[in-house]
Image (cartoon, rainbow, N blue to C red; front, side, top):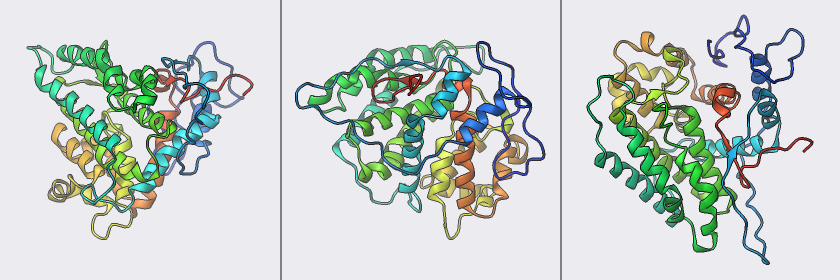
Length: 363
């Protein structure tokens, strides 16, 4: 099944319909289920904003419980895509996008004690990769040692989250732990993709819902915490050679990631030197990789895929023909809505609890 065409590309015809899903209502005449979901995703309305922090109750401590998967049918996904919850989540992503526009990774930014603790957690996970090397394996992809590493992450997730939280919110580790555990891949399939990345973003969103991160933390959330997460995942991907989950192959941006392209293109809006076409300059990509997430991702693609970008990553080459980063950035946001939030195979694994609420019927 081909992915939806990029928003900056001309579209003479809609993409072909995907395979039908069972137990779902029929779409309107002339519309496929896939097209209906993409319409729902494209219609998400969100302005950049931080989620409202959950109000504190002076009479009782807040109650938390383990989140669970709630999207079981296309109808469930459609309800989520039309809900206030998805608007808040996308608004958070857009707020982070605004926070890093024109910013380099090395630019000064506020790093609160909580962000320092998040960075310490990611450093711990990186050390565990060093302690759990890949085993001898006859296939290139899917090294079984990944199951050992991820099993250790899952077993310690609540404790790791508890080390980040203030004492009065220690109970939230019960709810946030599963988000952290689900942010690094799947142990059964030994794969990783944009759904796991989105779950890590949901983990950060939940911290914002708890009032633990605010507007002043957003530059640091992207250019310190998320950048560290991205570096960790690159290490995991190339140590255990995870299968790409749901990859579009050469027709995707990257076999694994999406959000660093969104926020990375935001960083480059109005850059005086680096243009979308600059990805064809290998020296400039290497030079700018430490400062800009977009260039960091392009550099990774160049490292792991052999051959010219026009053959290995035609989607990136299409984007390179766009004259301005602002258009690239807005197009990638639209693409994220359609290709990640609007895709049932991805969102069926998404977790919902008291902080990231699933819209009940009739709500």
